[in-house]
Image (cartoon, rainbow, N blue to C red; front, side, top):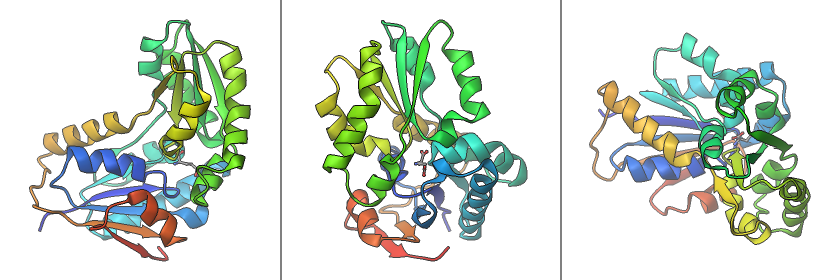
Length: 258
Ligand code: DGL
């Protein structure tokens, strides 16, 4: 029996990563957990983020997953070291894409929009130090954005006002790259494009994570070749918001108190 890829996020945002994975690995079964009842993780303590990440991982491993994709920057930056050292499957994480932004920027100024939990983590700081030497990294906490996305309010006036307030100070300081450091934020692309001038590069890590997932499966001889594989999505909150974002009629989307 081919085993599925397990994916979890604090909520619906990691489906932006699932889409890249399903595109790059069309013959893999997937199980996705949206822990929306506990979103946002970004405002929680490291201990709490770790506890929730363990809960999600154990559920996925109980379902026979062969690899776990932590489709959440906040959970990755706070919990992936622990997960890797305590469970016997490969883990793929996601972090703000500072390195490509640092390579790309001409103004030597890069903006990062992420959660408080990500920006305050030592993993994020180490990555910034390592890859952004000589570059000014302007950090902005996206407080409130995840809650609005979880409530299905992507195109709302509230969202536009919040984003404008977060981005204007970075624009005033002449950034030319904006790193989306949270897997919920790719869904903000239409709103971001309205606010940001055209020359600003918006960078997210979705495709890179899918590529890495494929490489790790290959390396561990874990690739599957299922024709029309199942994609199962569980949420412990609103099924409709998740269904809308997954946007694939053949996917199974259900409520589960995991
Ligand atoms: N998708 C999560 C991330 O990438 C959102 C975190 C949150 O729930 O605050 O960081």
